[in-house]
Amino acid sequence: MTPTHFAFSSAFILGLTGLAFHRSHLLSALICLEAMMVSLFIALSLWTMQLNSTNFSASPLLLLAFSACEASMGLPSLVATARTHGSDQIRNLNLLQC
Amino acid sequence: MDFIMYLVLFSMILGFVVIASNPSPFFGALGLVVLAGMGCGILSWHGGSFLSLVLFLIYLGGMLVVFAYSAALAADPFPESLGSRWVLISGVIYLVGVVVVSSLVCGDWYEVIWVVMDELVDFSVMRGDMGGVALMYSWGGGMLILSGGALLLTLFVVLELTRGQSRGALRSI
Image 1 (cartoon, rainbow over the protein chains, first blue to last red):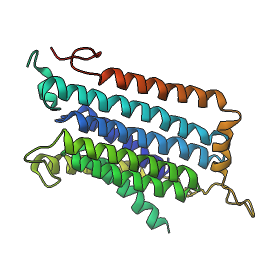
Image 2 (image 1 turned 60 degrees about the horizontal axis):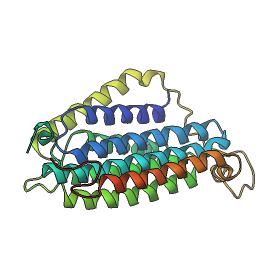
Image 3 (image 1 turned 90 degrees about the horizontal axis):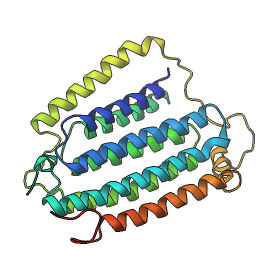
Image 4 (image 1 turned 90 degrees about the vertical axis):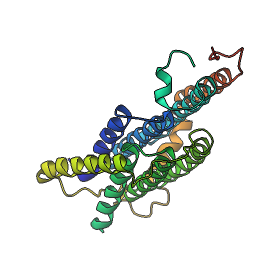
């Protein structure tokens, strides 16, 4: 294991714990998801660059396209939550009816 | 120059700690900008100039959108800044955890690590990742069309989610 590999692995684990534990806003959960996607992007592109297998350099870009899909799914659900529940606090989502 | 690389890696970890320690979304977006910049530094250090450019530009644009949303929707009257109590405590806990785990594994670190791609190729004008990304238009055409179709599908799903009060897929009760 090199320090770079340790850095992005621990970064992924940090993003996952931040997503799992005590989020107060829905937007911070989306930010954690985007941070995990950044660490995956760095991991995939470091794989192509350290092994000199540059034919696979397109795969981080495709990952980035799908993560853009994911982020643009999250923000309309945030908007819809703010419309139906009044704010984006996750505490409010437990209520059955506002 | 290895010290600069260690500094960049530690700054990336620090950006993730800022995100994971549950501040207000303003500060989370700030941490995401920091880690996108530091990830750009890591990738350009390893020789992927085009991939680092793409990462930085796309995440800067994405962070613009997230800043706008956090200013509009998640505006707290009293935001939890980085020096707030529970944010500071959980951030210190995460940072100490990372340092403890890295001190556990640092004996086995393989130190010849800063492998730069295409280092031994003389007179190479175009770096390898540009050539590899350009292969997406010839051999990776199927995946290109698939991801373009996924983005188009996302557009329609976004329109359906945010359509209106009474007709959309997600409506008020």
